[in-house]
Length: 77
Image (cartoon, rainbow, N blue to C red; front, side, top):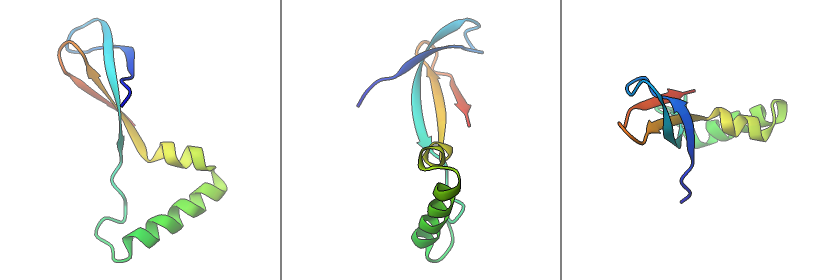
């Protein structure tokens, strides 16, 4: 597992510090649906045709930045 860090302003510390970057998958819109996997596949296939596969895969992820000093988490969607 690679450890990716970036320098961002930490609201708790009040200065720019190194933050650990964690990519977290966003919850699916088909959570409580029957045939969930099939609906997710068809939705991803259609979005991939129109937008592009890389853009679709990055749209399903949110970035969580965790301060190395104080542990404050910042969520970037």
